[in-house]
Image (cartoon, rainbow, N blue to C red; front, side):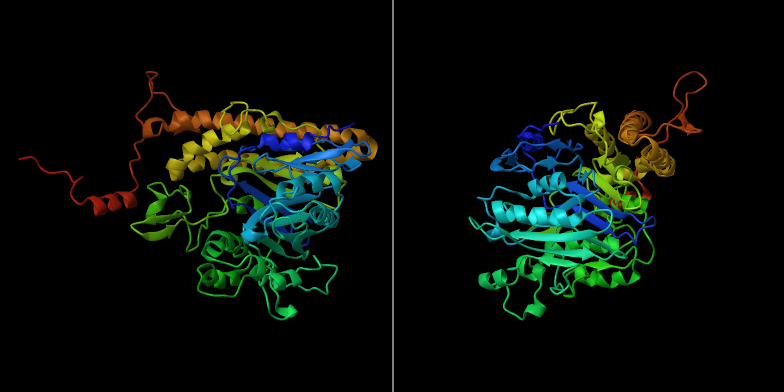
Amino acid sequence: MKMKKNVFFLLALTVVFITRSFACTNLIVGKKASTDGSVIVSYNADSFGMYGFLYHSPAAIHQSGEMLKVSEWDTGKYLGEIAQAEHTYLVNGNMNEFQVTIGETTFGGREALVDTTAVVDYGSLIYIALQRSRSAKEAIKIMTDLVKEYGYRSEGETFTVADPNEAWILEMVGKGPGVRGAIWVAVRVPDDCIAAHANQSRIHQFNMDDKENCLYSPDVISFAREKGFFNGMNKDFSFADAYCPEDFGALRFCEARVWSFYRKYDNSMDSYLSYIKGESKEPMPLFIKPNRKLSVQDIQNDMRDHYEGTELDLTKDISAGPYNSPYRPSPLSFEVDSVKCFNERPISTQQTGFTFVAQMRSTLPNAIGGVLWFGVDDANMIAYTPVYCCSTKVPECYMPGKGDCITFSWDSAFWVCNWVSNMIYPRYSLMIGDLRKIQNRLETKFHADQQNIEAQALDLHNEHSDQVQTFLTNYTNETAMNTFNEWKHLGEYLVVKYNDLVIKREKDGKMQYSETGLCPPVIRPGYPVKFQREILKQTGDRYIEKEIK
């Protein structure tokens, strides 16, 4: 099968005019820190205006001398051509057929280091590396070789690069306009640890003598000296301090998300709240050893975090509105009467275009071991469905072309999920329980069925290996479409149940008619008492009933 040379260019056009915000989150679990020996990586792709779909690139053989057209992932702008690989691999979303997975978060860093003349941007690096690599280390080499040859066009970026055996954190910055190459460092996450990054460079000091667990560009320190970013001893060099110095936003909007994840699995992390608030200079560790092993479902739930149960909990103050919403309108920073203010920025946010939790297992054949648990829209408001890395067909509801960022479509999971979530946001505490019932039921079933599905796939692999791909492709498509239809029904149910700011009564999970065939009296919830008291506090006697004499 021969892939046309402009496929990558066409992919970029499908995401054209995305307005990028530095707002993604990656969580990482080593194989000895997971309950089943999986390496686990998660990603929320957060950007206002992003239309979420499942990227798919089939495996292909290419002709000698063939060129690949590259366009910037965020804008669709054509950047140039690079030499095509002889053989490219099957890719579904951010995982390829060898279970290699790549995620990212942008940290920006020093603007002067962006090379606007380069051919390869961060998005190109991800998907080209996935098409060409069979392991995480190979992907890192491909990515760093590409920018060495063609230049690195983007701002500072943290990549998660993982396979069934290991996970790496790769941080990269450019060298400035017209200067080919990049400055980078990659650190392997220990197998018994967890890690995270969220739009702030997290690699500080690193062991330059540990060639097995630390890779870096040869000029990572000398370039910083040349530019005046560092002038100390080599042993004291910090990549983050040199190339992405922390400010208030880096701590409160970015590192806080990492802290919220870490604190769930290490009680000592509560001591770093002072660091998040800018009161302490000691940075959090790059990775930690958790107090228990984590499952895929744990990570799915962690991607739904809004700092619940902490001092930063978004549901507890007046800005949560009457129904304890953990969501805030943008922008993060704003000014009131010359006073600079901000909103908290949690892991889960309304502007997510797509989200995944990647499960990679060395104990199974690649076709069965790699599962991209996938969803479009906010992780908190969707059910993750399993996409096996060997799938040859994208579920129709996840396909590009089913609507776009300004065109609604009832055939698009992105738009149906957004329809549901945007109904719930304004009346969160009243309505979120209805979504949770469906979300929990579906995800519980998918995880419960996984062992049986994979046992069947393994039997096929042993006896009819050519049938495994078809079997898991069909299962991938079936679960996605069933979930899509469930979400449509959920939306219809919510419209009826909560119409006109009241609540229809239910019995045994069904809304009831009266004996005469009409709707029985509805529930009129009004505002919660806490919010009613705040109204009185702010309005004085305006809404207090007065006796008419």
